[in-house]
Length: 139
Image: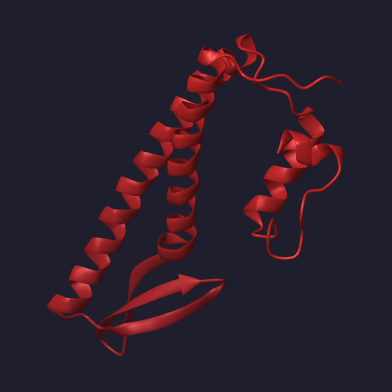
């Protein structure tokens, strides 16, 4: 395998894809931190309580008040907006993929890319796992 410098079109496309992917990764990270799970109202003893579910555990956030209603509204609206943003970024990345292939930018073998993507989503890259050897040339 020989390594060569990127031409102007390849460099521009690489920068564009990197920016879109960075935004996508940040949005996915925000989803995992702020919007994973669900939030709903539950009636207990004749009163409504706001509950938040994360990691299979429900936790009460308090009785229905203007503050808890604002929390629930903010959660659901923020979650919908973030879902829309992630969908838009996913569509943009999908549209960029054929251009990447045409410019010969998809240099990493598919199986290695899938493994690295799964490790990254699990938060293991850089926090216990490093990419070394010939795959580091691609990464």
